[in-house]
Length: 358
Image (cartoon, rainbow, N blue to C red):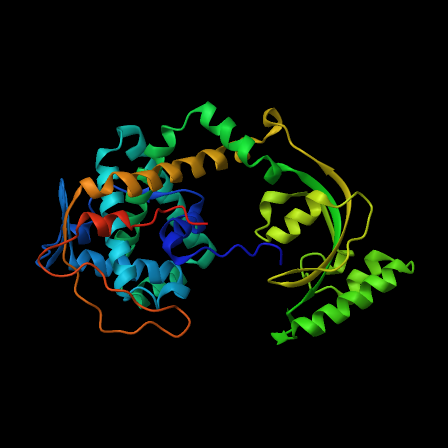
C-alpha cells in the first residue's frame, strides 16, 4: 500500500524496462522476423539508420503487451512522436555500444524472457504474445536493444558519480522500524470513502491511541494497509526509498521516536505512524544491490541527457502518420506530432523529455 509511485507516461518506456527486469536494452542481432523484407513507409531517418512504420507499429504492440494500461495511449500523436524518438535513441546507442555491452544485453534479454515464461508458464506466455500479435523474436529484439544501450551507458558511470548521487538521496537509505495505520480512500473490496469520512475515522483512532489503546490492536481493527494490517501495522527495518508516498517518507524522517503522529494526508488517505527506530545507512554500508540500483539510475540519466542534448543532432527527419483516434477519457488532450515532408525541426526535438521520468 505504500509503494504508490506512478510515473508520468513520458517515462513509460524506461519504466516498462524496469518492470521487466531492473535494467535492459535492445540488441544487435536481428531476429528472423526482422530479416523479412519491410517495404512499409519510412517514418524517421537518422544518422546511421531509419525507422519504418512497421517497426513503429511493432513497438506500439510491445508497449501494450508489457503494460496494458498504456494501450490507450499508443496511438496518440504526442506519444507516437515521443516513442519514435526513443526508438531512434535506443537503436543508435545500441549500435554504438561496446562488444561487452552487446553481450550483456543479450544475456539480460534471455534472463528476462526466461523469467517471464517461468512466471506465466510457456503456454500462457505464448498465448499472450499471440493475442498481442507479437512473436518471441519481436520481444527479444526489443529487450536486447534496450538492455544493450542501458548496459553501455551504465558501464560509463563512475564510483564518484555513485557517491555523489548517494549524498543527494541519502534519506532514501534511512532504515526505520515503525507502526502504521492507514485509513484509505479505497478499502476492502473496491469500496470507497470520502476524505471527510477517512479523516473522521483517523481522528477517532488517534483519540483512542491517546487514551492508551494498543497501536497494534488498532491497526488490526482499522488499518487499510494490507501489507501490515494483520501484524499490527509493523514495518520492521523498512528502507524509506522503497516507498513513493512522499508524505509518509517525510513524516517518518521527522517524527520524534516513539511519538504517535496526528493523522496526515496523502493520495492514499490518512496515515498515523509511530517510529520505533531510525538510522541512516552510510555509503560504505550500502548493499551491492543498492549501489547497483544507483548505478542503473545514473545510466538512465545518461540516456536522458542524450535525449535532451544530443538526439536533435542525430535525427534527420520524422514523418509520422497523424492519428485519427482520440485518446481515452482521462489521458489528457492529444497534441500534434511532427508532420509532413518538412520532418522534425530542432524546436520539436528540444521539447522531447528524457527517459527517466519522476
